[in-house]
Image 1 (spheres, helix red, strand yellow):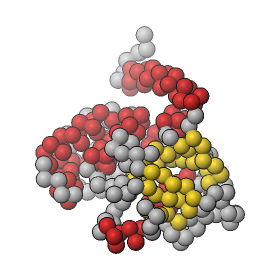
Image 2 (image 1 turned 135 degrees about the horizontal axis):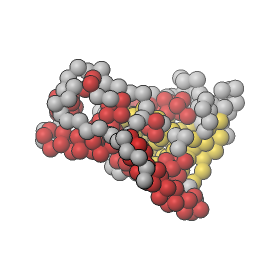
Image 3 (image 1 turned 90 degrees about the vertical axis):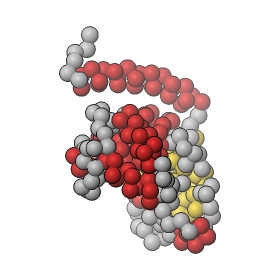
Length: 251
């Protein structure tokens, strides 16, 4: 079981050392990665996805339970630790949704495939605007439907200890529901985001600038108070979006 991952300091775009030694992220913790476009958010997500060990441009090292990825694999016989969802992912397999989910569930040793498929489809349709079912072709799904299915699949089928999310607020889905689904399973959850709601829903946020990590901030009580108000306003905005999306007019 992955209890924590550690990000050991590297360098920014100018080759300057980052201003920290080590960041530990524990199971069940939610961490947001924030910063302007080009600040290095996606690079940090990629370093974690690739289990970097000094060979990437940032020279960062990623440890799993204080071990390198290769050492962790040798001890646990587990090669895949990370599940990732990005705004640009799409399916390329020309199979039915149900067949894909069955194959994935059985490859993970889950033999109650029917009940798993039902749960995944329910979760995915809760995120997507237009419903779909197991008889639809994967390649016929819209961008939002594809991301919704991927998120539900990662949350409910993938046996990974780390979930990475790259700007899922732009994926054409209900981002708050998606965020809650992905972070509800006790896994290490790391999201790069421009969305203040998602940033404040995290326990901590890593601030990026110039390709390097500049600071790590804990979400404080004042911010949590603001978050409660922001969520209320977001629900109102979502209702207005739904009315317009469905061809209605705002009363």
